[in-house]
Structures are given as structure tokens and as C-alpha cells.
Length: 314
Image (tube, rainbow, N blue to C red; front, side, top):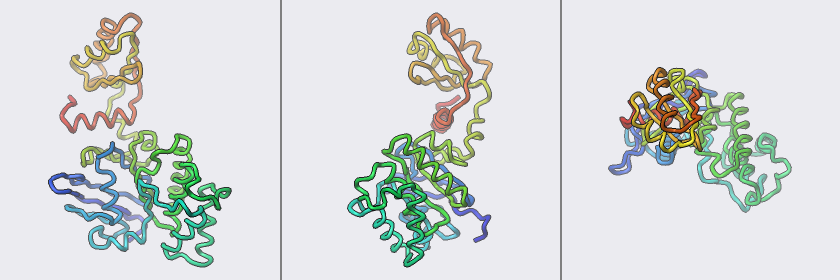
């Protein structure tokens, strides 16, 4: 496998459970050193995809390779060469940090001076020197997540699969965890990350938007946001947002409208429709209503591509 070849290639990859299709003909390629985000709500097919790529679940259609190895025929070799962090915390709670690392290092075939050096690397990288003799069950959630990540990297895998790695941890712990992912990617490690957090997806080099088992869009975050023409996303502040929302939903040229706190976020088919929107909002929403053109968010993109896929967008 050449240094520039994709580390993951999926072609029409599918997985069915009886009549239910969890992953429906998904295709993509991931180059070395990329932080590749799989964004979608629960049940979108993210975990099923990652389990197939890790050799834990056989595809029922299509094909995929990881590090040049076929996921259907060479699953055992894939497992030896990748790092994997599952949704469920997988370390032993009744062992210390250091004991867990020593156990997992041995499972990966590391011994002697090599495992000692990798344990020191892991502890320093995760920033848990003071906790090295602490039982894992006594660690805060953020420390456990960082420990699980470096444990998956002890054997220096060229790619690590992270399945919703920050579930249940606080925002500051999530930020620190992602700082660590950035450092790993800068060093050449490929990170394949599933998430349903928009702010985490913003930190990925490219993002695949998954919904109902299908890949709806794939690109960098700036490129995904360019599906909206400038001026077509408008924020509305008014005294009667519920009444304004009901009226806006019936207005021609409006693709989507949603309530965000006390403000409305409106996606227009054409920026020129903003004039009519302003008149309507001032009439229905009450005196002092304001309209502001805003930059689209990744959440706007996600809602839009789902609506388009389901035939709800204009």
C-alpha cells in the first residue's frame, strides 16, 4: 500500500438485518492523516458502518478495504492493524491507569522496553501523569475518554476508529479530547470519527452526512455550507415568533423555518425573497421585528440535505 493511497475505501457498502437496511450503498474514500467525520443522528447507520470497517460485522452488500485489506476476507488482520474506540467504555474499571495500559499493550503484542516506552507516551499524551496509579472507575469522564484513546493507539496504528468517543462528557473535556485528535492527525494518524455533535464535526477535515443509512453529502465543512447562496439564511427576531413562523411556513420561496430559542431561522430558496419576508414578519410578528442575514451553520446544512432527501425542500 503506497503512502498516498486511501487508508479506507468503501464502495456501495451495505448492511441489512433481515428486511431492515441499516447502511444503504455507502461509498467514500479517506486519505492518510485526515480527520474524517461521520455525522448523523442516532440510528443513521454510523456505528454499523464503523463496525464493518473494523472487521466486526460482515457487509451484506458492496465492499470496503482498510489499509488495503478487505473487510470481508481479512477482518482478523484489520483488527491487528487499527485502533478502535467503541461507544461503550471498554477499559477495566478495577485496574489502575497504568495496569490497563500494560494489559492492552500486551494484547497488542508489545513487551519489554517497547511497552514501557509506549505507556510513558500514552500517559504523557493523555495528560494523566498524576492519575497513573488511580483506579479507572475513579477517573472523571474526560480522563477516561483520553485514556481509552491512547490505549487504542499504543501499537502505533496508522488509523484509529472513534465511535462517538465523547458521549456523556462535559464540553471542556470534549474540547481537550479533540485537541488530542488534532495533534494525532498532525502527526499523520488518520482519525475516523462518528459523532452527532455539530461542533465536533466542524473540527473534521471532511464530513459525511448520514441519515437513515444513506450518505447524503460529503465534503469539507466550508464547501458543505456553500450549498446556500449568500443571503439565503436569515435570522428573525420578533415579538410573536409562533405566529410569524406559521405565516412564514406558508410563504412562497421559503424552504425551511425553525425556532431557535426566541428567534426564527429561515432558509430562502433565493436571497431576493428576503424583501417579502421582511414585510410579512413586520405585519405578523409585531412592531420592531428585525431580519438579519447570517452565515449558514452545519446544522442548517444537515437539516437542508435531510429535507431534500425526503422531498420536503423546494
